[in-house]
Image (cartoon, rainbow, N blue to C red):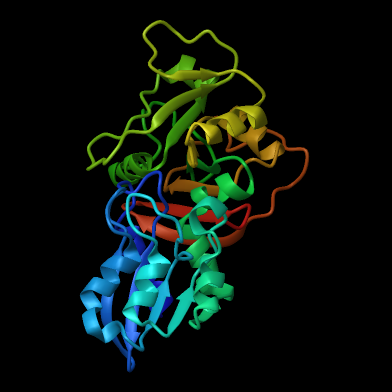
Length: 316
C-alpha cells in the first residue's frame, strides 16, 4: 500500500515536471508515515528531498518508499542518494529502476554500498510504478514514445453516428481534453485532417501545457492548418519524435491510422469510449489487421453516460 501511495503522490506532478519523470516518496518509521513528497516541478526539489524535509529527524532509521530509483547526478538539485544517506534512512524500497544511466548512475548500488538495505519491488507494485512513467521508460528502453490510441465508438462499434457531430457525451469529451493536456503530442491521419480539420489542442481544462499537434501521412496540409506534417515511415518518425522530447503520443485518428500503427506493433495502450447508441452504419474501430492483437489488463470505467474501456497492448 505504501508504494501505491508513492505512485499516487507522483501523479500530482503530471504536466509540470516534464521532461523529468514523475516521482513520489513516502517515509515510514515504526509503522507510521512521517513524511510524504513528490516532484512538483522541473528544477525544484525531487520527491525524496520533499519527503525527507517533512519527516525531519524522524527520517533516521526509517524506510523510504520511492516510485523511481533515486538519482546520483548533480543537476538543478543535489543527488537524492546523498540526501537519503545524510538523513540516516536505513531501508529504501524502489518501484522501478531508472533506465537513464546519465541520471541515476546506479542509485540502487550506491545506496547498497553505503550500507542501506534496498529492495526493488516486483509484481503489481512494480507494474504501477512503470505505468506511471510509461513514456519516460519507453524513450530509454524502446527508443520511441509510448503510444496511446484513443477512439470513440457506438455500442455496435461504429465511429460515427448519422446526423450527429459527436459519438460520446460531454464528460467523455472533457476526459479527452484532460488527456491531451498531459501527453506530449497528439496525432491524426491525413484523412481526418481533410474531413474534420481538427485542432487537437486541450480546451476547457486546466492545461499546464499544450501538446504538439501532428498529422501522419502524405501532404500537403490544407491551407490554414496548424498541424505538423510527419510524412516519413512511422517507425522512423517515432524515433525522431523521441529525440525531440516526445515521450507520450496520443493517436486520435480514424481506422486507417489505427490499423497502420497496430499492424506495425506501435500501439502500447488503447482507450475506447463506448457510447450507448446503435449507429447501424459507418466505419469501425480498425480496418483489417494482418493478425489479431491481444490486449491485457482490461478495465472499464463509467464516464458520464459512456463507458471507457482501457487495455494494454504492451506492458509499460
